[in-house]
Length: 471
Image 1 (spheres, helix red, strand yellow):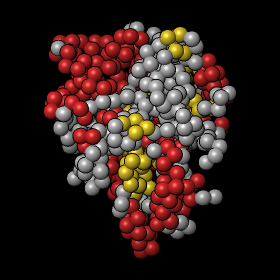
Image 2 (cartoon, one colour; image 1 turned 90 degrees about the vertical axis):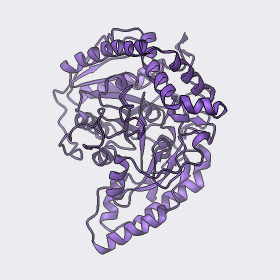
Image 3 (tube, rainbow, N blue to C red; image 1 turned 30 degrees about the vertical axis):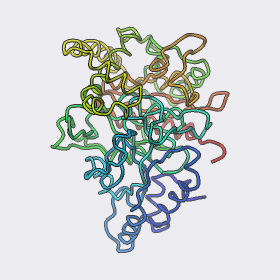
Image 4 (tube, rainbow, N blue to C red; image 1 turned 120 degrees about the vertical axis):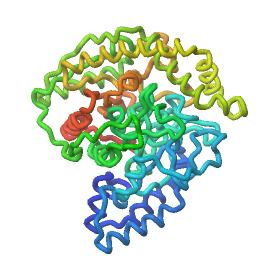
């Protein structure tokens, strides 16, 4: 068994037991990146100090020092996340030479726990869409089929994990950016409750609320996600959006599922779901019944049309981009893609009154979701309406022969960025064409551990982890 075949949790145990050294582990992943990354373009920058950090981590093991939860375990960090001393481009030519002088709080915690940054993973420009390409580094490809997209905007992180270029990765999620690529690449992705993991923007400490932005783990197993999440989460006095500590042991995931009340919506009453995805999802929902859960299919009504939902979500983002990058666009419009330029243009058209009116639609959606979670422990659905598609497309234009908006109408993820509830995408099977499908599992606010417990129990019972056959 190669070192890169082990999960992050297994690597941590082997390092602490002195059966593997951090140097061996980091070297194995760097070698795999060097050999295979060119196929998929997951990593765009490598941490040139990773081996030095691995040697220091090894010395700590030899000396018998107290070791952190992540000691010696390598991690991939998304290129939207600032990394002290490591190139951070946000996928934009404007930042092609930018090297931050700070780490965000959750990354400081990862490093303090002994995690070693391997490098940065590809993302679309400023994370503005659900696929992964940008003017600096080009396209990231799906290891299940290199003609297909891994999704985005954490596409590079998803591919790094799926292709075993890293044992786990950090992603950010402002509309499904953890869950979309997790579903399309067959890995586990977790978006925590808003505020449980500090999300930082130095220029706008309140910018993560419209819509809700989250950082979270992308992993091969739920156990690995719980491990990384347990380090990332927690209160921070310097961030106004961070909630108090949940005070739970996220590594204790064993749970008796009998009697757990689960609501299942096929499509939130809005989305067209491809038949091959629906077939896998229906079977996975039945598995929850097999575990003793009380599963009920519900007719979900979000109180808005699909167009209203998409407009509410995109309106928040367009105004956000106009406020954040409008001045940079005026100075150097040629450095922006057409997609970003269009969003800035639309955002500038909103009046303050029109922008605040979006909150009315958002409130309607929140109340509808919360009403379900007041009655049920979990709400499950497909993560996406389709499997991976051609990486040259923004999205599919039809599903089951019906026309859809390719920019938005295949993602069932944006809802939870409007509401802030915790939501995971768990791999639950392959379609007849051999592509992975993700089940979205959401819980009440601060029921993060319950979401992880349910996914872990399902994973143990039905062996959800899968990988491309050639890896």
